[in-house]
Image 1 (cartoon, rainbow over the protein chains, first blue to last red):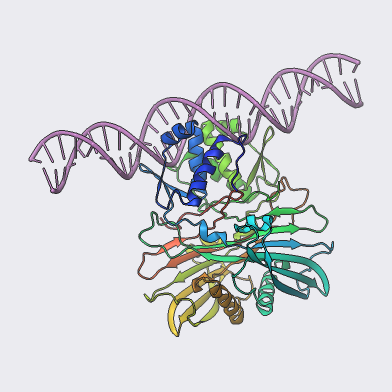
Image 2: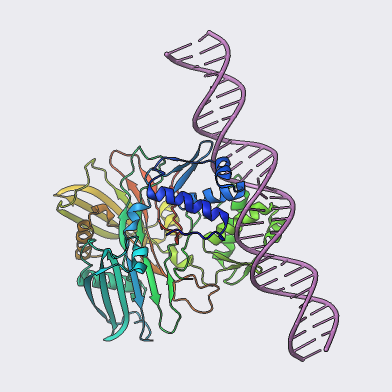
Length: 244
Length: 244
DNA sequence: GCCCTAAAGTTGGAGCTCCAAATTCCTGCC
DNA sequence: GGCAGGAATTTGGAGCTCCAACTTTAGGGC
């Protein structure tokens, strides 16, 4: 999952190892992370690498640094609940332009049980061949199909959004001057309400995630998924392309 | 907006200055960022600070580093379209427990025009007193009001999601074993489809953002907004508490 | 047993350096 | 004029160091 080649930067080796321990539970919430000095000894790396590793993990939200004390696994790791997300495969294979604002839009969808392929399983953080729900959409602009979309989600998440709901969403969004393809699949996940047992006051809040694969007409496929938070109080981040 | 106090780390000074130039356009897409060596001279900081600043900006997605060449403003900055987000003020002032799964849930909402207070304006990245839409929600669990929510969004984003739509969403989400408060306001923003003029193949994808302020019953107010992307292909990130 | 103080440890900022790999640019040769 | 090759830059990894601010721990005195 995390495989880091030996040719990769050493700090990534450290990151991957600690992250693995956090995810698999050997480092439970609240557990202290070895200090900079200890990491240099343990992994035989320089202080720069140890530092960099800790900074990456902290920026990932997996650990928290407390000045004078140390780094700790976040008391309420925000990682796990977010493993239930949805993967959306979004295609525009017709070479057609997207329907412009005001175009009458219709669509059909059909949900069906399926098994997670290795590809999908990895993205949804499920085991291979785990039960998933595949939802196929055909979007039409003025009657002409302009977009095919296939969405995968872990089985049991519930019924897909109904036709009316989706219509309402699309109408709302297109009235906001955005395009139809902005209607995407999303998974709402909430970290439970914060309590005083939290190591830090940070968590809480709502996470809305989306992973998307887009095949644009007349363009090379781009498989990305990014989430961006701008501004000075926020970190602005994007993920890398899924495939190169 | 970006104001960085003089007591703040110097690398943040550099970050803020370059970010400002990118956002206001003096550094247009594709423009080269001064190199490490130049930054040290220009700002009178050490190489570590210059480096750190560039890394932060790169991790924010505002610039791209090309080995051997330099750092450049991303051809398609992902920052601007995302400034249209929605702020959600979420309250549970009744001391009541949230309705558990299966509880019958009803709610009312009312949208009204308003002017952005300094507080809201800052979060929505609008000018002070800019027109916004305030939407007030009352959520009821088995008839008893359990949650008040106030949502602010830039005016003109479109009508709020209708009652039926919201009902459908809530039903869907609660059937997935999540709680009612997971129904949040979201803003869909899409970066235009990538083209070959992009400095890098990265952009594309969908951003779903949410800023939330939660006042939990019997708990100190927590004002946070976080977005998390787990896994090895993703950076996992959260923002800081909005206040302290 | 308790409290206060001092020492030790830890983070995070900041400085400097060296190097490999990649890009750019310029010079000189044909 | 065109091309090739080498020099100069630049990024990104990695190493080391010093220090202020803070936390934790340990010890000594009462």
